[in-house]
Each structure stands twice: as structure tokens, then as C-alpha cells.
Amino acid sequence: MRLFVWARLPEGGIAHAGELATTAADLQGHFDAEFEYAAAWLDRSAGFDLDPASLPRNARGARHRARGFIPPLGIFGDALPDAWGRRLLRLKVGADGDRSDPGLLAALGAGGLGALAFAPPSEPPAAPSAAPAQSLRELLEAAADLERGALPDGHRFRRLLEGPTPGGARPKALVHDEGTQWIAKFPSRDDGPHDVVGLEAVCMALASEAGIQVPATRLVRVGTRRALLVERFDVTAPGGRRHMVSFRLPLKESPGRQALAYGELADAIRRYSASPVEDQARLYRQMAFNAAIGNVDDHSKNFAMIRDVGGWRLSPAFDLLPDHVERREHALAFLDGYAAPTRAQLLAVARQWKVASAEAHIGAVLAAVRAFRRAAARLGVAGGPAFDRIAADIERRIGLLT
Image 1 (tube, rainbow, N blue to C red):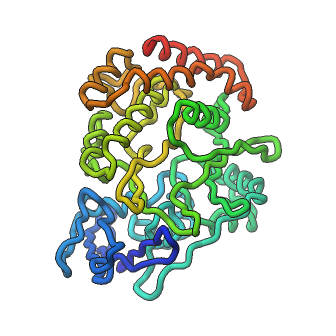
Image 2 (cartoon, rainbow, N blue to C red; image 1 turned 135 degrees about the horizontal axis):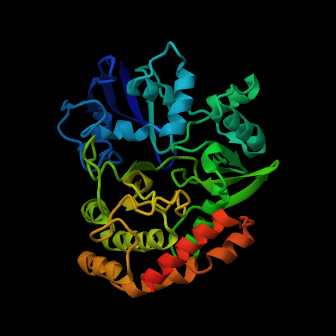
Image 3 (cartoon, helix red, strand yellow; image 1 turned 90 degrees about the vertical axis):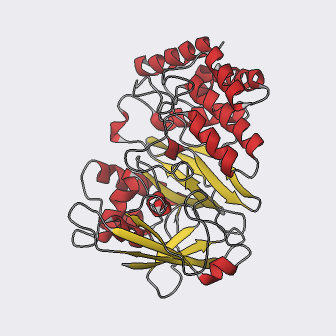
């Protein structure tokens, strides 16, 4: 398979960034791949390395090769969505289509998050239009049907499949409203007794109160249920796109090699950020918030870097949730363990990273998170035993950090 790789630009427009070629996948889904930057992308003053760690722009004609979408070609696996988005792409491809990663990348086209777009070597891909926010109800109902194994009716099914393809594991869709592009997050049949959509809205509000940069959010009523709208930070005011990569890329993750500690993210920031001191302090405060709120799903793909005019920067925080699955342990270690850290441990991390004003970072987080119950009540997140268990865990974590 041959695909042209395009980069949608922050100021609008699109540029040819390179060409990707892959062999046919075998029965285990394995394939060989190679990528070469386009001559125009090498010459452009606005051109940049698509992956800051593994895909340098080098001599014209140089080719980067890998067995599958792993470093140095991890950017193409990173561009694919997680479970929910992959499910939509497989349905779009159909039972007889190419469901390998290269086939899904071709099906994604210009419908993914971030700047990259993919198309056969002919012309730039046309980006699918996000649905209007007025169609949230039919999108939510179609997602709910699909999640429980029922095929949505034709119109709702087409609406779900023909729009852009969001990332993540949970049901969602991309919508627009009055010129703003949103990720719409829906309830899931796996939520059990928890109002997960409401809990994420609470966490995003508290993170903002703690001085953490987060996208704008809106919790909206959709029939008898609710959806959380999260503003897309990869979309620019002129309608362009910012290039975005998860931390899997600067950490050079591959099968069998994943990040184990927050310190590895800090190392990547020191190496690649255009403003490493500021971004490391932002990461530290976000880490403290995750510790206090119980956001245990803090793996490397839930952190991102975006490329702006000045270079690579830590993205706004996203996918913030308390430990509603009672996992207890974090995906990333703080100092020397994965359990909820103590204040002393977070202060030791600050000394290790040379982060100034660690007490102020922790204090701002605690001041915000102590209002968890009040913020939940304000946003209509119901109480009950399940909610009380979450609140008690947060209070326990606050105690460790006090």
C-alpha cells in the first residue's frame, strides 16, 4: 500500500509531508513499512520533524524503515485511534476490506485528531465534516446501539461512520457548534453505577481551579442522559490544525517497552520542549492533581505534546477521571511506587526534577480538589454508595498530601 502523508497547517491549508509504503499484512497483522519525507517538506521553512524523537528530516531520499508502526514509524500508529475509533474504522472498511493498521490508516484519511492526513497518491484528502451539535441525540443513541451489539438504523449509522473518527476507548463523536469544534463524550454500558461523563466534567473543572491548563468543557443534557463536550485544542482559529503526538513518541515506546514513571515524561520534556522549565512545572502540577483526584489511568498516551509556532509544548490536560474502577495503583510511578503518593514523595520528585515552588503547586491542587463534593453537587453528579467510595478515596489521597 502507498499513502501520501499530508500535514494540515495551523494557518489553514495543507502540505505534502511525505510518502508511506507498506507491504501487505500477514495473518498475524505484521507488515514492513518505510517512509520518506517529501522534497517540498524538507525545503519548506515551515516543515518540521513529524516525530521529534525518531523521525528527523535528513538528507533528501533518505528512507525510514520499521517492522510495523513502531519507532521510527511510531507516528503512524499514534495517529490511529484507540478501541472505539478503531471499531468505527473497521465498520467503515467492511468485513471484506483491509483491516490491518495500514488499511485503517487509509480509512482514517483526514478524519483523525491532529494535523496528519492520509490518502492514495493522487490529491489531498478532503476532511469529513463534524456533525452539528444538534445531532448529539442521534449520535449518542447510535453509539449506544453499537456498543451493545445492535446495528443502528441507517441514517444514524451513516452519521456515526461518515464523520471524523475520534480517539480513545469510550464512545464519542466529533461535533461542531457555532464555529467551535468539540469532542462529545457519551455514557458507556461499562460505566456501572458511575456517572463517568459527570465525573470527568467535575475533574476538568477542578483542574482548571487548580491552575492547570485544560480545554473548555460543557456538560449538556441529551434526552434523559448527558454528554460532555470538550473543546478540541488541535484546531486553530483559522480552521487549521496543530500537529499533536502522544508521549509514546518522545518516549520511543514499542511493544514490550512502555514508560514506567512520571520522571520519563519529565525527561522527554527537557529534551524536546521549546519551554522545558515551564512545561516541566505544568507536568508536575498535573501529576500532583492526578495523585489527589485518583486519576490512575495516567499512561503515556493520556499525555500529549503539540507543535506550535515556537516548537513542541506540553498539551492541555485531558481524560481526567477519579479511580471509579478501584484500581488503586497508577499507570506511572511517582518516585518509587505506583500507589497514591505522600507529600514527602511529591516533594522529593520536585527536588529530583528541580521544580521550583513545589509547595505552591501542591497547595493549589489541594485547595481545588478539597471542593470535590461541592463541585460534583453543582454539576448534578449524583451521590450514593459508588460516589461515596470515590469521594472517600479522594479524601484519603488528600490526607496523604496534606
